Image (cartoon, rainbow, N blue to C red; front, side, top):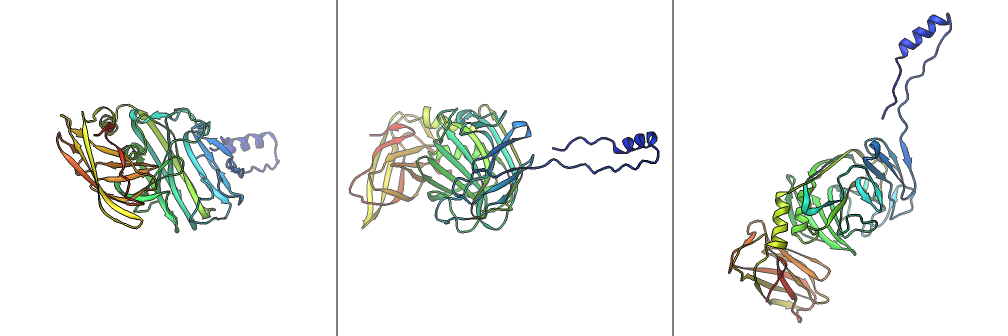
Length: 375
């Protein structure tokens, strides 16, 4: 934001006419000074409160500082050096919505997932040396006014550098927003799903509803939950200074979103009248096994965008799957319909194969198809 500058030529002429022979020195106009934040959790609001910029040096004590402008921020200090197999040094970022009770103005958030229309955001950023990611961090919770930790976190990595990786394990890929993304799923007390762009970029223009819908289909976000904030910034492990957000925009609208409505119907109101599940171990060895779960729609109507879930025995961790997108959160295993076979007709079955670590001596339990308990 720049201060208003008077018409200096007219001012000089007027003064010169009144004071003959008096030399007047006119200083050039000065740009508005940037705000510098060095407090670990310090923040400020920009654009009249539309966005919040936070330093958020939560994982280190290296004296991180950011210089905040009216369009973004630059990391100016804090040359981090934390292990790349652990948590990053922080997440300096800009956001819309509410985060730990600190809210921006007129963001359209919180917004219930089932009511998400087009939720769009664009960002451009500058990268630097070191090990880091440049990523969105979207937060969801059953409580629209959550003041603390949320129930689910969705990260979108536009760029990254160094030997770092998201939380959890890679479960497959997704084609979203005209690009291919590696999908990672984990749980650290809350669900974490990350999308890592295979083609790195320094600018993004996304419909965040697309990613939310995919996370719903994979069982990481629920349609009754609320998006509470949308953030973009950097997670530095090594380095930091020079990373910068040059511009950031966010817009959220509620309404009836086609893909969200479809997902809501299939998972809550379009379950089968009944279903049947069987399970068999295909092969086992010391410390692991492969198995198949066969789910049959025994109802009289088609099940769209099917999703099967079951409870894994204690000590069993699913590592991969086929014929579906298979993931695990806690003890709950989710097998989501592949794009090439999204529906189950009456009487139709699907066999989901998977590999797991642990003992195969105890069978899984609690099989469900789109929320309906199977016999």
